[in-house]
Image: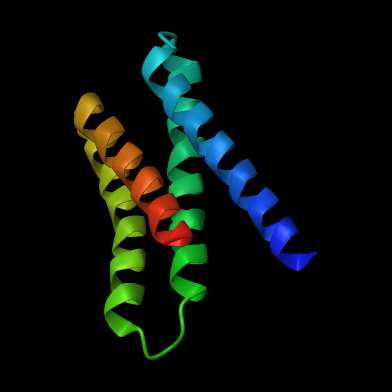
Length: 105
């Protein structure tokens, strides 16, 4: 029963991540795009936190890698402030996709 719930949680996280990434690249309105970008950044940070804390304490390299995926999302915020929108979107996309991959495998 518990593994089924975890699988459903992963499916929901994957769908939310995919939907936010698709909307990030398709919405043209700057206000909506900024709010979608903010949601995707927060989502990437949360995913990296879940991935880092779900690993055992002796898996230090994997935990550092999972935490660095959250740092990618923070760097994306800095790039967005510097008006490098495409690079910021690509970094936050990489943060979410790699974070979900790290969480699953």
